[in-house]
Image 1 (cartoon, rainbow, N blue to C red):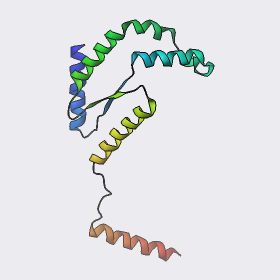
Image 2 (cartoon, one colour; image 1 turned 45 degrees about the vertical axis):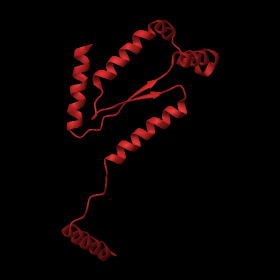
Image 3 (cartoon, helix red, strand yellow; image 1 turned 90 degrees about the vertical axis):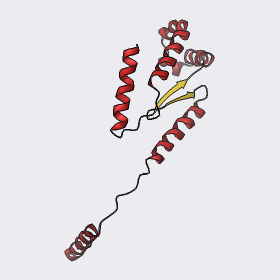
Image 4 (cartoon, rainbow, N blue to C red; image 1 turned 180 degrees about the horizontal axis):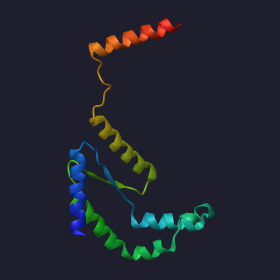
Length: 135
């Protein structure tokens, strides 16, 4: 897995050097909350479609998954392409944290409408007069 993670880190570095904003979110759901959500999927007919028996089998590998996630985050985290490890047991809080991180990233872009040059302003004035003259 080491080479793949190094490739990911290099690719993200390339993207950021090209001006792409990279934000990565790991939604950290607890073992207990996962069980609760699985039970809801089993207990509520309208949620049955979300359930997969393989999810239960995979729970036995929880520790392995956590180790792999930690390794991936550690290997690919950078100042230019940060990871946000977000507690995910409460959906409203998870959404709030993710939205806040995105808003902050967009605000850091310091976006503004392009400034018009005097020549462009003259062109606009001419266009306005031509449109008025059409009647």
